[in-house]
Amino acid sequence: MSRAKFLTMLALMFSSCSGVTRLDSDDFTDVDSRIDILEKEVRVFSEIHDAEFELFNVNGFQSQRQGFTIPGASSGDYKFVVKVDTADIKKWTEGMVKLDLNHDDDSWTKEIVSARAEHWKTTCEPSYYGRQGDDVELVLFRENGIIFKRIIIN
Image 1 (tube, rainbow, N blue to C red):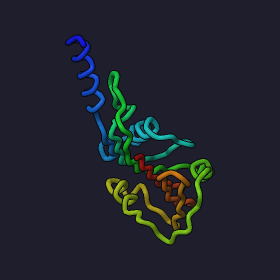
Image 2 (spheres, rainbow, N blue to C red):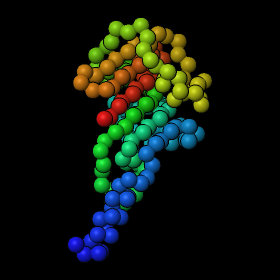
Image 3 (tube, rainbow, N blue to C red):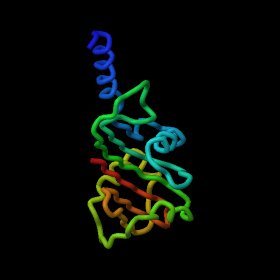
Image 4 (cartoon, one colour):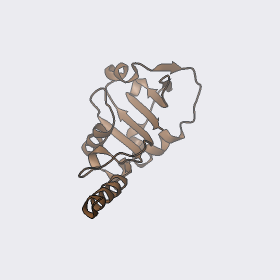
């Protein structure tokens, strides 16, 4: 193998490992910026009026990549909350199964909204949803139009 080819391959390997692997909404004070970033990284099912998130992806994020990268093994933990119109909630729960839980370990929901907790006050009891075969959980405050979602990728 030529030296140039070797150096090119080495550079590509390092570029696939570099970059931003964490995105936190606490770093973005503007609502539109938070929504824009989240919409680039997760599938959204309706218009979002507000968002908070803590996203981790070992391979980095689409919105933060520059140049060509070689993907590595997938591993991620996406925690986010969105505020949507209550009429759109069904779009977010479609394909999920309602779980009969009195409570779950939802401490992560409080952590991701701690910087702007006043924006995320709820007045109703949560409902819990999951997706069969996937590590996805959803905590829904229906009357408030607030949806917390966590997706773990292994």
